[in-house]
Length: 429
Image 1 (spheres, one colour):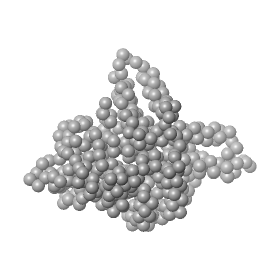
Image 2: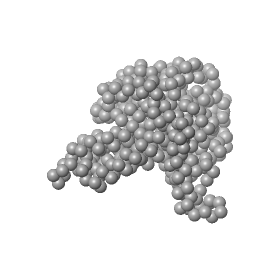
Image 3: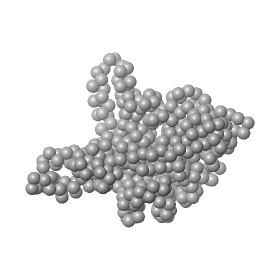
Image 4: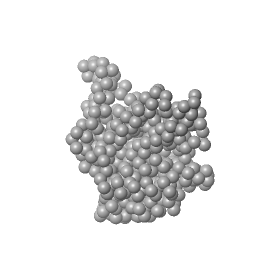
């Protein structure tokens, strides 16, 4: 079973197709309950088998150092200032340089190529702190996704050239995967056409994280095969923008850096191929899972912060002569948020742990985590807005900024429909 699901391009069919064609005419409701039971028990089984649910001392020290730094230098107020400047700068270069000095850009890069090789639980701890402060940086696209593709797909020469530069912060990377409005990597159809000088690209890559500001680009193209095929996928590393490439800014509600890459008869050299032609599928699967797990950790931090801010508001807001936190109905809703958050935390840590341990069930663990955090963060975001009342949707209150970031992240690298189908396929449904 491969690491993708052959889902429709819209990525929103959930389990409809699987359930409609299920064997032996089993009841749809029974299958839904069965699949949900598998997903919800998955992290519990991992915990029983010894999955670490806490960080070790070194990981806690890293988390605390990053927490202290971003609280002072890359917090929500800094994000507001960056957004309101309106100069198109997606993140503060000086702040990014200071974060690089802390070593975070090399956490997941092998020591042999200038990194720290500290693991994904450690990187997840960093992303959780970023999520709590809405810290904007190219860490996910560059030091996780881009670096992983180079590590897993690149030649020795490419690894030696680019990975140390990424670890040192000298280079940033953006990765162009999507072509439609939803996450569907196997539906890549950007044609890779051979030419005398190498290859010609004509087409479009959509919603590229940090696509405007990145120094180099990695683009997924198709050298053979058709829609949904795992074979024939090729990665191209573009050190310089070729003639015929246009980066179009895409504005989203979370005020981060996104771009569409438009190729019009863009000629690239044969040396631009990352690894081998037509062999991108396996490294792409694992690299995507690494990026998804780190994004889930950021979303976990954002959900935790929304929950904490909402509880604080319930304890200070007066209504009918008493604190609204004393109302039993709101207490019940707060308890629901807390239990969902803790269950989701275990799935995210399991996904990060699976990557560090190189387990066979990485894809299942990551899809479980991304599906859970999508649903949990949306639930907490909606509850936070409701419990804050009308002021919750105003720009004056920070909770609205977390709400916006949540809604974008839910659709990055696969929404719940995509990951439910993927998990189902990986488990034989």
